[in-house]
Image (cartoon, rainbow, N blue to C red; front, side, top):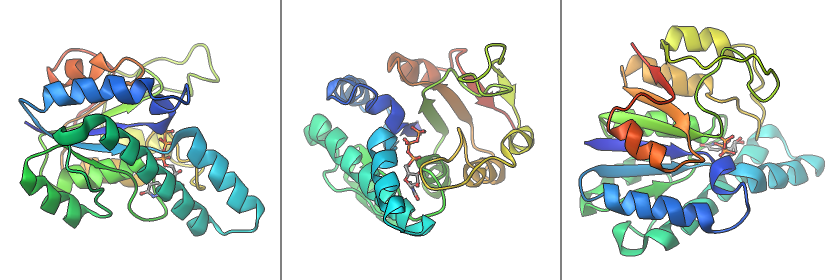
Length: 224
Ligand code: UTP
């Protein structure tokens, strides 16, 4: 299968060390023997820290987004270091480059592309662009909840959701640099229009990636 995997920066950089990069690199190497993989990594805490520095210096939101994008690309480079020869050692800056580099048959790793969305949107656009079979979004919670599970104890995990239901859940949420919600609107719109099979799962356990690929019942499935 051709699979796009989005790994949140909040997963990779929670402990601020190399451990999660290493764990993911082992799993990705093994999966790449059977599947064609495109990996999109997020910015995490360093992106938010850097964005806040430039915002305090008076930068506008698009410039803040640009700083966030640079950080996602540094994170992508760290994952490339771990993957070594299994990955194509250049980071695509746009979807055309991602498709082009994939011709070498190696794992493709990228970060952000342009301002005004998150890496979730990048992964959804990329999945459409390369005509992926599946999009797997690995995030810091178990999937999509009816309300923010970090704020509400009684938040319930949604096992299946349509893009329209997601749009209703996320509309009205903040869209400032560094603060895009669990799934931004662009990502949902893309998943809707390309009828993309998508799974949102907890990325703190990297084996969830394998489970999601194998169709096991984890996280939230976006159904059309
Ligand atoms: P993300 O918000 O996607 O990374 O990118 P994250 O921190 O990994 O997200 P989660 O919370 O763990 O899922 C960091 C910031 O970089 C900018 C945005 O400001 C975003 O908030 N960015 C990223 C863009 O403007 N465009 C992109 O294509 C990607």
